[in-house]
Image (cartoon, rainbow, N blue to C red; front, side, top):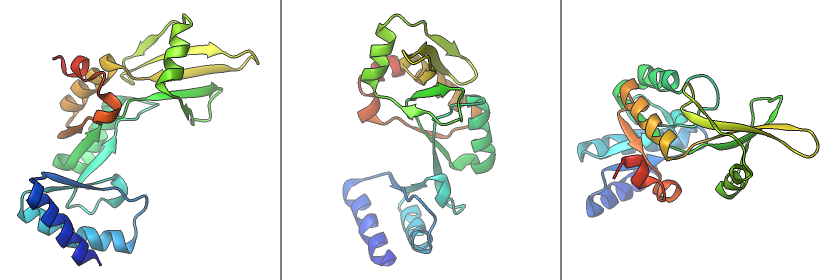
Length: 189
C-alpha cells in the first residue's frame, strides 16, 4: 500500500530528523511510480528531499547518478547530467576498480581493493587520465592476455569532487563504508 508506506517513511523522517530518502528500484513499475507520486509531496512539505536513480525520474525528485565513468569525459558526463536534471542533480562518488580484457567490449570486471593493491605492488606503472579523472595501468597475464585496469584513489576522488562541483552537481554522496579509509585525504582534513 503506497499510501501506508509513504506515511511510515514520512513519520520516520520526522522522528529522526532525516533530510532525505533514497528510493532505489531496478526498474520503473506502476507501483514505484505510484509510491513516488504519493511520497514526494509528503516529504516536500517537511523539507525532506526524495532521491531516486535516473530510471525513476518523474521530474519532481532529485536524481542520484553514479560517478562510475569508464569512457569519454567525466566532466562532460556531469555537465550532461546537470543539463538534463538541472538543480535536481546529485552524484554518488563510487570508487572505480575495474579490470578490462583487451581488446575490450566495453564491459569490465570489478576487482577488489586487495587485488588492485596486489597488482600495484608488483611494480606496475600507474598513469592518470585527466579526461576520466581516474588512474589506470596495463598488465599482461601468463596466457598472453592484456588487461587495462581503471581505478580511483583519494586523489582521483578529490579531482572528481572538484570537477562535479564546477560542472553543476548540486549534491554529492560519499559512501562512508567504501571511502572511510580515504576520507581524510579526500576531504583534506
